[in-house]
Image (cartoon, rainbow, N blue to C red; front, side, top):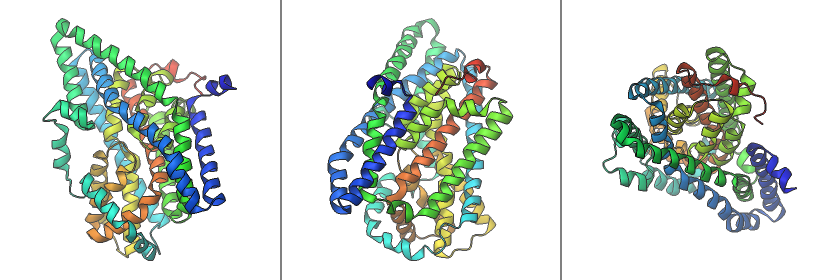
Length: 437
């Protein structure tokens, strides 16, 4: 029995844990009642899920630092890093452009906020909690210049200790370039980072084998405390988001990038990232999924280590297409609920703000929702109204964030494959191999 369980690929085990968690959580919620069932889920089940999340967060900083430095070193030429970086950022910005307009289009068609004005006022009880989260994140006040300044760490050691991902990426790239320019004298440090990246990847995969159990606990907690009401209360918004994300995945990543640009089999691409999608959907964290994403890109899709080690950590931080879709839909949700008629100019402002704001979104659960205040402000939503809207959505955000993260991770890998092919670093025989699930 244990052998057959281990024989299953990770994504299959994760989804078994996901559905078992839903079943257990609903059993607690409706079998014992919302109060007692929710208390049991909160007190006795959630800590196991929380422990799993803490374990994967524990590995984010060492993983990004070691794989990024190692990936830069593997390029062998600092000039190659410049061209690869420009291509990567350009592709990420292009997919985000498609994403935000897709979100606006679906939001306009679905009208998720129509008739929701009275329900939103019911979220007032969560205003204080959300206000504290917004103040802590600084999401409502940050502008583009603030994000640019935070990229450069005044103290790299402090950035590492605080887990500040953008400064870590910036410093790791400089460190890798410095090692390359040093030549033979830098080889001992290069060997250290190569070895460290391999060790961290092994440790990470050990932790990821616990994913099915962590996911079971997290879903049992969500359903045990919220029940099916979490779906029915905000069904139109959830439907709009899921449909927009599916369209982004199938049309933009699949049809445009994989089939048209790369001219590679679409089914193999999705088979190759199945493990990463399973972990992304269940953990709702691009950073937590990063080790599995790198493994899938290298082992299943044939992306060279130098590309995977540099493009994917960058994508986990700046490529937030799911978040861009979400921010656009939330803006329309708010406008429809509050009776605001948007002009074409306001649509443009929402698109631009959502694109830039999504770049600054952290790869952690619910980060996108906390950035929504900045987007809502451009269509005339007041601070009080914005907080009410976020407070209303917040209890349901976990299920929405799961789909956003799966979208982000799919985009990361699609861009990595594209950059790798353009740089002649994609093994197409590995990409086309059948036995990946």
